[in-house]
Length: 307
Ligand code: PSU
Ligand code: MN
Image 1 (tube, rainbow, N blue to C red):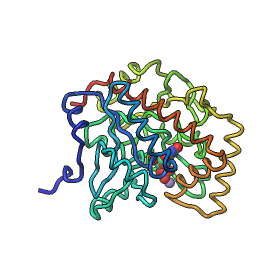
Image 2: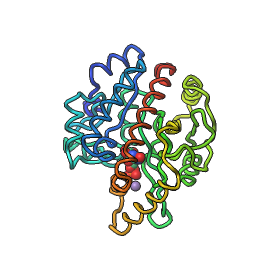
Image 3: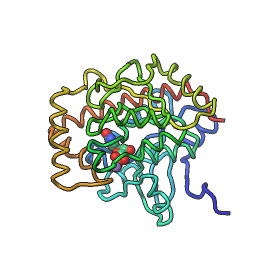
Image 4: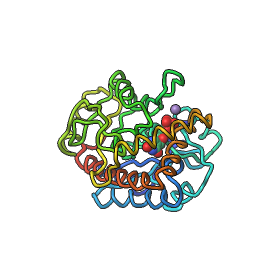
């Protein structure tokens, strides 16, 4: 019989951890293939896995390899993804195509959530999620990540979203879709490179255990869908708000002038911001991803296993 299981492969370490009720943290691959330049992307992917391990959890980096979700990439697979320059960026709409054609694709937040949920993993760490784009009135560009948060029961630890996006509208969308947005030791929704955005989270949590309790209540009660745990960048790595806003405005204008549209917009902006800051934004990005991985591992250690 044809079934979902032919489209997923869970690595041995991850599979053992899940079977024994251990803590597992999912990690995405689009950040490796489309979010950071080589070789920093590979270095970061390895370091983030190390952070998860040091905190006592098992990392599960997810991608589509040769037409199957692979949950828990090997070191060699990680390297392939980090070095390839033309890997498909797979969102929900691309999965069937990638499976059927036996393609290798990097997974966004949306598709990493799907792979994690299929494998039975509840916690996922990344840098920033997608959201409602600036100028949405003209483009209708709303990341599929938000829709996925509304439907798939995985909690994402992110440093909020970059202000390449329209943050107030992103939060309105999440509210409409019934997605809990929790602030980790903060009332403010963070803006990725900065600890503050001017927008508030729905609820503040005081610790990883506190966050895990709320997630468990959300899922056990059958409410369904995901949870966004917003974890601000560590103060020592945060960037100057006016400086980075100027860079983002310029990068957004450059994208418009270059006629970049659709799925290319986010990778274009991420790369342009690294260029315009002479790599300073990349250092901040790496610091916040590691910080999210650590918090995600702590949450995973406090989360009851999936039934
Ligand atoms: N934002 C970041 N870094 C990233 C991404 C977003 O700060 O790497 C990536 C994630 O994989 C996210 C995707 O899921 O971009 C969103 O793309 P889009 O805006 O096309 O939905
Ligand atoms: Mn989009």
